[in-house]
Image 1 (cartoon, one colour):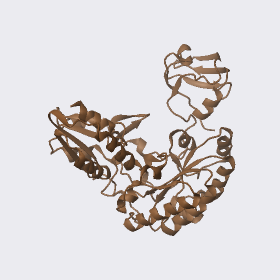
Image 2 (cartoon, one colour; image 1 turned 90 degrees about the vertical axis):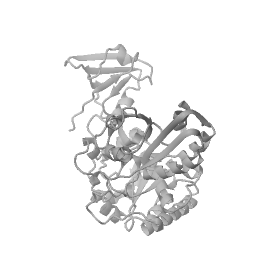
Image 3 (cartoon, rainbow, N blue to C red; image 1 turned 135 degrees about the horizontal axis):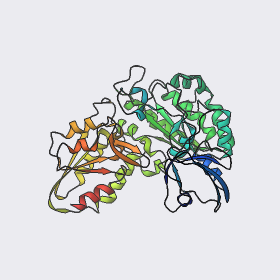
Image 4 (cartoon, helix red, strand yellow; image 1 turned 135 degrees about the vertical axis):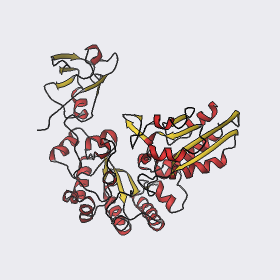
Length: 437
């Protein structure tokens, strides 16, 4: 039996919990004599007009509350974790797993491999379904959990076992059938590994998925990322030929199901030297954090903001954007169109020395690589994307992957002004920064 630990992190001001004087550090023992396993069950239990709440205060004192409220009124409690009975850990050893491609010495959270359907539902993380128990299926049906984000990779049972190194991975078609039966919608992810699940295997997977089109909300196909710490040599990079074939198969699938559901990530179009598709290709940009449609959003935002940027600044100003290879190429295109008197608009491409040249996304840039890219340059105003920093809830801390901080960057020049972009898919904040000079 897993230990259930329901710790209060914060209480919303003027809420029911605030009125009851529930504090940070207190623990919820039960709701209506039931210990919820996670925030999903908690939300279900408090959806009542009368509830019995048992709380253990920080000093160890137990207090019972009889609460009368509106049916859907929240108690106003924020918890330290969305799961109270412990995270369901990943038991796979996927050939492409990036967690296994990291060196020692990074912060502990970067080595955690979760495979928890509850976080998939709440936060949009991907699950492989290899650790599913009958209880999980019953709870998903009971609470009408939908959608889930599933790491699919292939529908070929033998190949899926080989790629995940887990015999439980073979049941994927049966699992998809069960999701269809209970009408749970799915976002699917395919990490494309050349010579493993591309070409004919990708076609097989997409053909198999046609029967599940009623529950599939999106399919994101992304290229495998290979760091310099990868010991196995079975992985190969996606090249132009593979990229072109993948784009072709995706188009064929969408025609077959008569809707725009499958999408190749931006990287495929860059590798294939093809134009980034228009926004219709990406629908509602449902898997934007997987690099599917990010460039299109940024391009469209730039075009809208270009008309709103000042044509002249009062004083000579230098503005430097430092980002990873893929984004840097795009910003260099933008630079050609920005014609503002007294503005020196500089784009610095940060080479990823930490993980290797094959890794070119901003979310895997370290503080050291950033420092080495700008330390010998005259940087006055520095713009970096927030995805370089550790995520804390819905915001970001000041800490990079390698434990370097914003303060370490500031030490390069005490007069350096650092601007952190909250929304990496929009040009709005950059336009506001320029117009503020």
